[in-house]
Image (cartoon, rainbow, N blue to C red; front, side):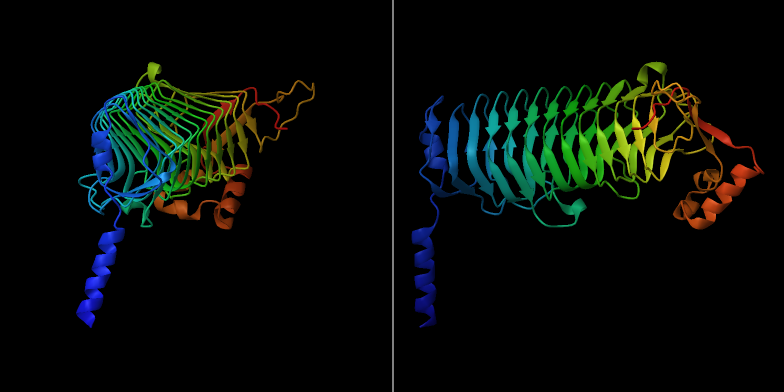
Length: 399
């Protein structure tokens, strides 16, 4: 009886198994359009010619649980309206929902879930990846795959996608890409750029990550109009730059992060950051600088209710930074002539902050009542010469 039930089970499974999609792809001529009948199809599948695969939001391509679900090994193709699900789980082979290995393709309006990596662009140029939804697998953040990975890929446009429960959005050796209007929640690094100069990062929304946007060894990057919130890993920041000069950080909202912006000092005068018209609010530290003297241009920003507005790794770090026209929630001066500019400069000095800056283990006690009391006593009767962190000669009055 048991054998008969087992036979009937496998017979029913065989009858109702999803048909493979690959024969339909193979039967479509170059330049043709494939609109499969609504339903589920078995993967993996490979597109190796210019064509359009349009699922109209009603087609599911399910992988075998091994490898990548759909590979786009062509140029000039379009993939839209599909649900891609059930990739393999190998980090070594970068098992993904979709692998793009060609140029000038369009990947639009797809849903990608139950995958290790979401979309992997490998040596692909001028592709448009727009309005897709990518959801990874539940796992510790470091054990997940990237929602999007670009490697050695140029001039791609990543527009209007939604990522959740992924590790990072990674751009490695990939210059000249545009990342516009995307959303990411529950990730490790929101965006991670390595050796990817001239990247435009604009109007993205990143929330609940360990770190927001990290730029490493990638000059000429523009970070504009983004919202980064709740990046609260102990060593993280809403926006972080390392050896990535001549960058513009403009018009961003950085809220409730471990540090609003973290940056090292530039190697030369041509490698400074321009940080202007941003809002840094309710962060543990508004800005943090490490390295040597600095030289960054920091103008027109709003520093609102950060526990520490600006911190440096040691006395003297960042003393050459230019501060001009920023608004400070803790400014204690007046505007007697009503021109919107404070009558006296805004200055930040190192008092007891030097304790935890020079002895990192003491950072645990930063903002504690004991250090706050010691800081007050230092300000009233300094027993050590304080160090100037910054002087903003024309602070804007906060509204």
